[in-house]
Length: 362
Ligand SMILES: Nc1ncnc2c1ncn2[C@@H]1O[C@H](COP(=O)(O)OP(=O)(O)OP(=O)(O)O)[C@@H](O)[C@H]1O
Ligand SMILES: [Mg+2]
Figure 1 (cartoon, rainbow, N blue to C red):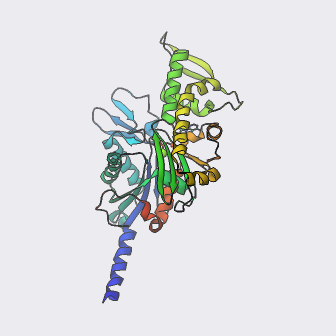
Figure 2 (figure 1 turned 30 degrees about the horizontal axis):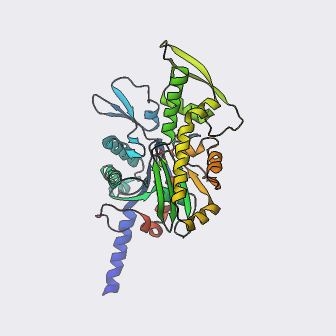
Figure 3 (figure 1 turned 135 degrees about the vertical axis):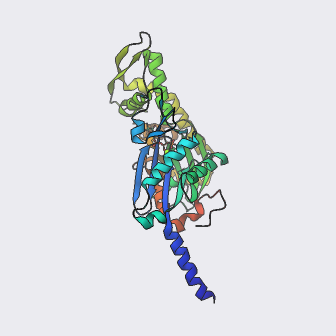
């Protein structure tokens, strides 16, 4: 009897599996990326939403909303609903994610009827249970039928094509917009980790304060980010770059343009870079000796947008006496790792976190 029963059971399971639309999300402070199984990365947009304060209506999401940052009239707010890697505005995050998920919907009538999104979504290792649950809740409210969480450093390691399930230690430093996540991975899990709310946003803030103090010039967040990306550096690279910066003179209240040098920007951001390096050193100090041996060979894998700051890899290498490898395309490493999971769910189901128990096993 069992043999006859198992056929419909297998069929039902297979139909159920096919009805699920497997989607991966990297919900970052600066950028949100979405991966659809079989299609690849379909959304790569700034985590910004513009709303009308009077009506609560959403006016723009992603790229378009980012263009409004710092330029909105009183009745419009362009906001970033995540701060330091954590959801700070649940409702706006939900609307944004819902909008991105709608874009991933399957085409055709059948696709629309049987569209049950199953989400695998990245979370910082240092996050609390409440923060993790908020990510899960936001994904469900945005339309996901099943939600699984994955620790971001593990996704980065997968994105770097590393074999995460072996007993070989892997050292990941993911320096994004809102947070720095440092973790040592072995046997498919995180052995040691450290999370720091200092990353790209803090560097922008440092630049804004520096201009205010040194040049009495008020500049916006986007200008600070441009300066960081164009002439920012972590060590003296001998390039002596310069650029013109426009802002408002704080003493006269009038527009002013000044020319700034690479060295000035390095001075502005150095204390924060030291904090990031400090977190990496602390993690090395807490790593079990057997894993340190592995890491001396494989080195530190650097990921996240801020790891592209010119000379940062060199500063780190000089500070920790370990080889440093900047991952290819550091901004997409988390979502590429999640993509690998989605394409081979059976192989990775044991490393996914499922904090709401009503999800059936994958
Ligand atoms: N070339 C560059 N030099 C320096 N910083 C850069 C460069 N390119 C991007 N960044 C910075 O990288 C940060 C965004 O990185 P990323 O997309 O990894 O963050 P995120 O995943 O959205 O944030 P988090 O993981 O902290 O929640 C921004 O602060 C951006 O200014
Ligand atoms: Mg990130």
